[in-house]
Image 1 (cartoon, rainbow, N blue to C red):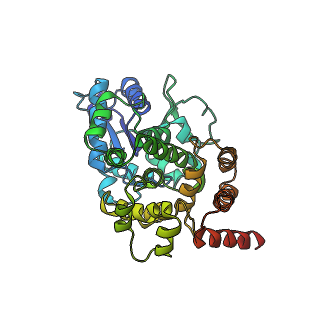
Image 2 (image 1 turned 90 degrees about the horizontal axis):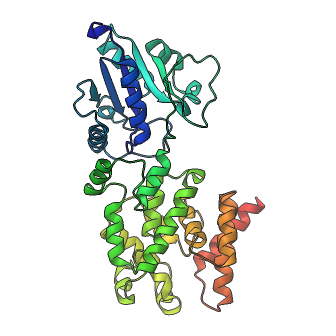
Image 3 (image 1 turned 180 degrees about the vertical axis):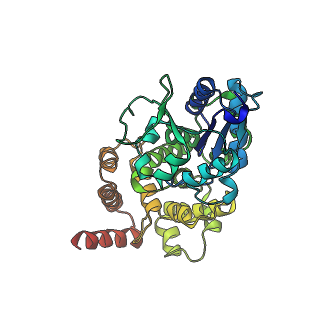
Length: 382
């Protein structure tokens, strides 16, 4: 068969990170279709994702390492295309396929995907144009056997592993080594400090082992709740990991870090010095961890007191600090269960629990916490 008559396979996605599920689909497509070219197309940002993936160059390097370890390193047909990443915006599949149709006008184009992606295909931008540009090539994955009516596709022989990229990233953010990743990929991402590995190492230096474990457990719950709260994974993990970053600093060091504009700064240090770590932590996150995201800094600053008008990320960390599985008191377990069902109700409950504990201890309560309680009561009345 002349090379221009052989099919061309396009495989788009974030590949953040590339894992065994991606490799299994690619290997089967290469074996069964024997294409002239196989293009991996890492996107800059995909339409259905709320995160910015690690830079294209890094994902391309990880893809190359994964393919090398899978045994495809010398296969000249395999290309990693920068087409979408170079545009630095959301690029829709119809645009990508139009590009490859122009590049290979005499070849049949296949667009590779797992059956989990096929379920949502009717909601993609311009699905009719996609089907005119390419034939869908689908690898069946367990639990995703439903096929949208009227969507033609070619089925790859075999069954392919679940592609839980969200779960893999969550484990990486917590310092895990997911079995779905090849050794070469793990080595590369650790060497380049992706998925917050640099931040975790710095944090480990600042905190006691017990406090560091609490930070990991807070991040674990924040990642579990992030999707429901509409918060990007990396943002949730970073804010939760850093929320107590100043907690183990000596009080004089916390005082030096606290900005002059801290509400009731003098009373905080006189009546409730334990609270100082939240403002000190926001400054430490900015200075030592180079955090510039105002939402992350807000989450660190308000995780103990709360305040009216908190954003989604700050609310998420406020709940996760109280209710992570390292907290053994009954109210924490109740708030944790509630958070999995109704995050807004869990937020109100967390505020109530924190206030009750503060008042029952006979301590001074920061007015921000009381103001949050009053604002939530007004919201409920409205």
